[in-house]
Structure formats: structure tokens, C-alpha cells
Amino acid sequence: MNLIDDLIEVLFDTQNNEFDNKYEKEKFERFKSLSKTKKLVIFGTGYYLKSIEKYFKLNFDIDVHGIYDWLEEVESKDGEFSNCEDYKYQNNLKYDKYRDKIKLISKEDFYKNPKDTIVFINTDMYPSIPRILYNLGFMDIYTIRNLLKNILPIDILEKQKFDEYELNKLNYSFTTPEIANIMTLYNLLEDKKSKDVFLSILKFKLTEDYYYTISVKDEAKLQYIDNEVIHFSDDEVFLDCGGFIGDTIESFLKVTNGRFKHIYSYEPEENNFNRLNAYVSTLSQKDKITTINAGVYYKNKTFYLSGYSSATTCTENVTDRKAEVVSLDESIKHIPTFIKMDIESFEIQALLGASNSIMKHKPKLAIAVYHKFDDLWNIPLLLKQWVPEYKLIMRHYDSTQEETIIYAIPK
Image: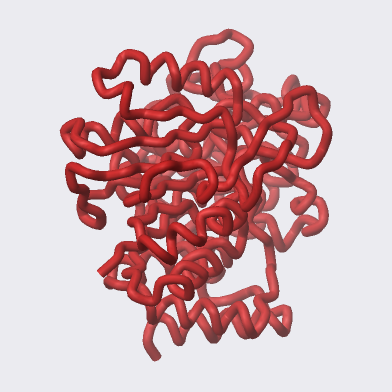
């Protein structure tokens, strides 16, 4: 049985509510094995602290090395987590329940020898924490959702919501059409590396084990402009959807040596847009860059904004900030040759607004496929349906479930 057949069988088992699959078992065996040689630190003093310590002892015969209170860094404004945006999600009443009843390990003890440490994140919400830990050298990262999902009620865990992306679906029953689409996409992917990435992200969806995302992670600086995948001419017309503060433009200029025909950069959030304009104003090629204070969609419309910084997204829910969105087909005066989209779950709607340009001109595409659970297969298959000659190449650029990109390259 080959790798995809193995995974397809596991996906079909979910239809019978069989979630204790081989990848789940491998996850727990890996955790047990690691715990024999590495110290286990609980990261956070949250609500489940005492139960978690007992759980590790009873189920794995593991003694916890200690508990680290990362909120002390926030309060003292000193440390790698002092500005961690995940603080906004914390329920301090739950977090403080055992805070004064336990002995904490020091900052020095926690940060010493990260590669010899297993970190268990004991906090309800953590879109940024795993990435920060990984960047600090911690490679073995576990959470309530991936080790305790069969102990705690799923409905409690599923109540968690991030601004940054749609959380993975725990114990999800894959439908037969979804499984068919997954197998179809696997066979359409251009190279072995793409297939390895695809399988690893699917295994993450089944287990929430960061082992899989870390194992296929490429350098973040390559995202959208990966020279292993995509190559540029001196006449590129680049549509930067999700312009943020100009970071992708900066990367694009480096790989093209500043040679291109035109750039359109779309950014709906006012503060980000002002910073984008400030950056563009410093460039010698600024006359060839059009910045547009709008998001992208399948039609022109007014939305509201939620979230901040790179996690800003459009919503129908009324907030104190409005944003315009536009159709790409109706907002450009050039024939596009390269389109990048990373727009907080609006990728499919925006692609519909660019469908005429894509089907007629076949530009190179770099599209985020991680904001929605099923974007991973739905977006690539949509692009292949529109332009059958596209080569589909998948890469992943983060230690977490974020930053999976599908490249569609005309042959």
C-alpha cells in the first residue's frame, strides 16, 4: 500500500467515527519516546494544570519538570513573549486559578537547552505561541488540542476561535467527495515534494501534530517567490493581494533585481495601507507601483474590518472600521503575469473576481490555501479546472498550520 492509499483508508475510517488512526498512535508513541530523554515543561498555569500533571503521570509515567508562567514576561515587558499577541485571548480568571499554588521554573531554566525540552502549551488560544517557540529552537511542541482532544469534550475545544485563521477541525469526518478530491489533487501535483507537503498537512489535520508541519517547512523568506518553483521576467505585472506593509513587494524587488513592468498592491486596512504607501514612496520605481486601499473580492462592495496587523480580515459584522473590496478583473489596466493572494479566507471569492484574467492570460499564481479547512484541495482543483495546463506545486513555510501556498505555473 503506497502513502496516499494508506492515508485515504484513514480518511474513510473517519466516516465511522474511527479517529484513533495510525497517525494518532504514532503521535503518542513519539511523545512517549521523546519524554524518555527530554524534560517536559508545561507552558502556562491555565485551568487544566492539575489534571494535566496527573494525566501525564498516569498515562505516560512522565514527571513534569516544571511549569513556566509566560505571562510574567508580558507583565514585566521582558522576554521573548513580552509582546506576544496571544495575550489578548487569555482568560485571566482561568489562567490564575493555580498560579499562586505552584512552584514555577525560572526563565533561565525554561530557555536553557530548548532542543532537550518538550513544551506542552497549557493555554486556550495560541495562534502565535508555537511559532515563537519554534523560532527559539523548541522543536517538540504539544497542546491541549493535540494530546487531550479525546479526554476533554470536543465542543469545548471547538469553541476556540482565532482572528488569524480558521482552526483545524478536530475529529472531522471526511465526506466521500472530499476524499475523492484529495486523491485527485495528490495525483495532479507536479513533484514529489508537493505530494510530501500535501500528505504532511493532511496528517496535521488528522492529528494537530506539529511534527508534520515542521518536517516539510521551507524558509519563510521564500514564500510566494520561491525560486525553486517560480521564475520572473523583466516584464512582470504583479498583483499583490494582501499587500500589508509592502513586505512581499520588497521580496519581489530583490528576486527581480528591481526590474518589472507594473505592480498593483491591494490593502484594505488603513494603518497598513499608510505604511505600505510610506514604503513605496522610498522606492525609485514608485511610479510603476499602484497602491489600492481595498481588499479583493468577486465584485465591488463595502465590508467591515476585524482583527489587526497581518490578521486583518473583512467581515459582514458591523465594526467601527469599513473597507472597500474590488474585483481584480475590473481594477487593473495591465495584463497580469503574476498574482499572489494571502487574504485571510477570501481567496476563493477573490479568485472568482480574477477568473477572466486567469483563464484568458494564465498568469503565474501563488495562493494561500490554509485559511479555510478545505482550501487545501478546493483551491488547487479550481485553478486546474480553469486552466488545465497549470502545473500545481505546493510548499509550506511555517512550523504551524499557517503559510501553505499553492503555486500554479503555466507550462
